[in-house]
Length: 481
Image 1 (cartoon, rainbow, N blue to C red):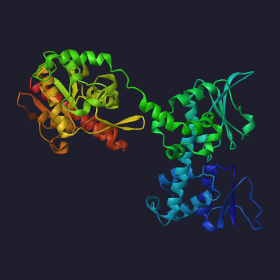
Image 2: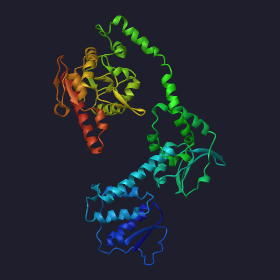
Image 3: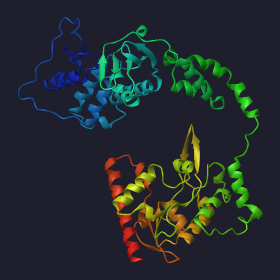
Image 4: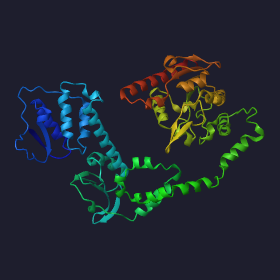
């Protein structure tokens, strides 16, 4: 048996060098072993055989190296042997890492997922407690990670708590930040960390006040916050009582009277809907009047779940109009179009295309945010054809007031609103389309689409196409002047 001695439980580089030597020397997986801190008691154990002088170098896929870096942090005793077995097989099976159903590959991927999950839980469940010593204020936390993820996760806390001096103690080691340098230290024990501080009661009060009994799902909660972490969480002592009282608190919430309606919104509605003038042929004469009127729109049900209607913004006489799909979460709260991540992509693309956004009227086909709740988040939902048709009145009013010469529709929903027909963006993208009022239309991709492309190269290519389309719209504007 050939044995490689590693410097520590997470000595990835040591394993990497020993595994390379084993493979070049032709040492089969059953004859190679990896041990931490000593060669063990094997009577016939020997060190690695030096590779022959003419041993050919070899290359392994980056996917294997990345996976191995994760698996080494797993607490399983045989993790090094599993990785060497994969390394050995890669010599004759170069595409092995693509076969996720392979028993060894699947095993390694599952261990890597467990390591990633342990790192995530560390970010979520570390609780610092304040102490004072001769050096001043310091924040100390004790944590028991499922796997050896301290070194990997510590930089997150540097970014999160840059201005604090803190230490995280674990049985595997310790990490400390002094405001300038992150240092790793020896293992610690639970008694080396404080058990409470004066801020703890405030934290418990805050946690109890944010506990929503109507949305309690005990199994889901324990899935996200496993009991193994409870002993180190101050708020965990409150959970059993909060769960026991959930049914009563929910009944109390349901029985409570409804809050008073929004006085500001009610005033706006009463002014705009006076004598039902809005329903019976309201025609706005100014963009400001249109912006107020949209708050009273009841043409489709989307107003019920939105914070407010969001009309377009820009010059009152803009030659270029850009039409998106609908307000997103950021826009719904701010009351302005394209102020979120997609808006940032659009701003940058306009700048690269040589177009000043201040000269552009930016709006959406649908004026209320269509979404579905997912926990505390509101996830975008594509408006239906009926909803786009119902909201077209507002877009037509904006076009009548702004009188653009070129309209760029971002995506299929915007194109449906502008052209009043369904289109395939890929087939009609970039072409000039004549409109009944003498303006020209062009279809391109929505900036939000770029944010959903996972491959960086493909995302960059799609962004270049968006910039090219905007440049073409600018040229079209000059020809149509």
